[in-house]
Image 1: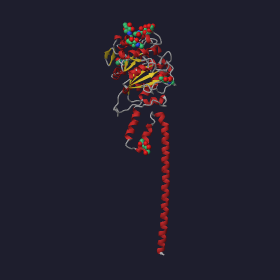
Image 2: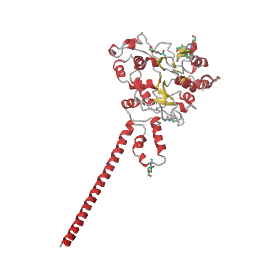
Image 3: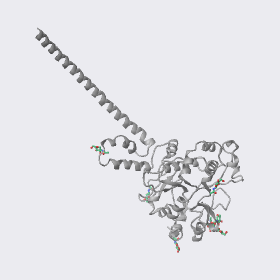
Image 4: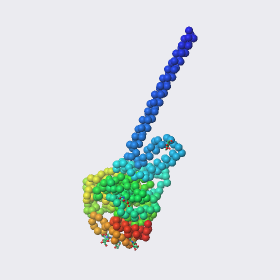
Length: 394
Ligand SMILES: *[C@@H]1O[C@H](CO)[C@@H](O)[C@H](O)[C@H]1NC(C)=O
Ligand SMILES: *[C@@H]1O[C@H](CO)[C@@H](O)[C@H](O)[C@H]1NC(C)=O
Ligand SMILES: *[C@@H]1O[C@H](CO)[C@@H](O)[C@H](O)[C@H]1NC(C)=O
Ligand SMILES: *[C@@H]1O[C@H](CO)[C@@H](O)[C@H](O)[C@H]1NC(C)=O
Ligand SMILES: *[C@@H]1O[C@H](CO)[C@@H](O)[C@H](O)[C@H]1NC(C)=O
Ligand SMILES: *[C@@H]1O[C@H](CO)[C@@H](O)[C@H](O)[C@H]1NC(C)=O
Ligand SMILES: *[C@@H]1O[C@H](CO)[C@@H](O)[C@H](O)[C@H]1NC(C)=O
């Protein structure tokens, strides 16, 4: 009886254990189901997030996924992959993106707090071409750039819909940035300048930023330009107080109290600036908003916004002169245009040596004041190419 009972008891116990075992199995299975479902949901969401974030916030499609999944199956080439992603972040090659200006300026305003770079960084010059469409003097620029690929980047802002037609081996190939319409003489010009600066700032190797038009030419060779700009303590932003109606006359009293008339400055649109200064410019919203409201024709934001803004906040960083020569000797809305018949060796030489006048470069007097010149008509290309090696030394 006892034994039987024991037996029955043992039997019951076995039954119970079996039952508990089964319960545990079910538990484990359902846990597994939930776990796997979790993983699937997780994967689905993050790939969705990638799709969502990549085009708008980051230039490189591989960047986000590089951080999340590919590192999971790390083999020998993982280090290489991580490095490639870093390269793309540091030096984006593809200029296309879908950021709005607001997103772009925010992203471009980011500054690393670490002073040393984790790569060997060759400082580059960013040449930013602001044009309606074609670049008729492009062959001269291509000759200027040839052989110095490591030291420059090119950015082109043309009107939306215009596609620059250049061959694949041109340094201008694939260098058009996402653009917007620009009505000349309006604040849209300043918007376009900021758009060029911000796109160029995304590349951490760019150190100096030069704004040029389709009618600009270089008057020195690349090594001279590189040395001159990277060695300068100042940014070549022209800034002066013009008491006439073309200067202070364009000031609007409603800009007070943020901008006072004695702070108002005028200067050439065609600037050259250091990375630090470029970041100050693209980070400003408040002052450009004031210009948007109160600087309307015949006030031209492209001649006043940057010189005035820098005069208020960072005057000591400016050289107060431009490195782009122009002939304003005949009064009027447009400077002199040089055509085929006007191009002589003496003329180009006189720009190169500033016609004997002197200017300041790092507190020293020099006759080398201009690196670029404007305005040159498309038919000036031929005589310029003819004399480039003899006169401009490229
Ligand atoms: C991860 O593994 C898969 C399958 O072996 C392979 O196809 C893929 O290229 C690997 N990814 C990386 C980043 O190594
Ligand atoms: C682009 O330039 C090439 C060579 O100059 C020319 O053959 C071609 O027709 C041009 N294409 C367009 C769309 O203008
Ligand atoms: C340019 O002008 C500003 C304001 O007048 C001045 O602070 C700055 O030192 C000038 N720059 C040079 C290089 O003289
Ligand atoms: C500047 O332009 C005017 C008018 O076009 C011309 O007469 C003058 O010679 C030009 N000056 C120089 C230095 O080329
Ligand atoms: C260019 O040459 C033409 C013809 O000689 C002359 O009338 C014109 O003033 C010159 N332009 C400049 C800017 O020197
Ligand atoms: C240089 O100076 C001479 C004499 O003042 C003048 O005739 C010439 O137009 C000037 N050239 C330039 C490029 O400024
Ligand atoms: C090129 O320059 C030379 C002299 O320097 C001149 O003889 C020749 O006519 C020029 N050719 C063109 C196309 O301007």
